[in-house]
Image (cartoon, rainbow, N blue to C red; front, top):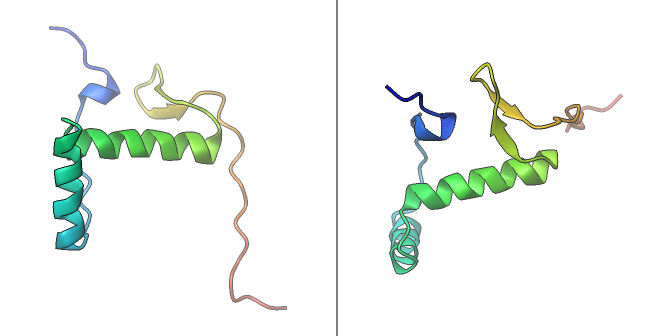
Length: 82
């Protein structure tokens, strides 16, 4: 039996969106002959690239990894004053 890559495995991501936005999204996907899942996976890969500057790749230990992952950025705390 062939081993599966991480991209071949499934994990469910449930989101809530406006029904009209969903209908339009599905129609636009159909016009491109792609599934909504394909488009969402593409957007997630693009988001990872934009946030990390690196392309997402499966690592040897089968946990998600980012090639040459930079140190995480510190987020500024909101609403905290000294």
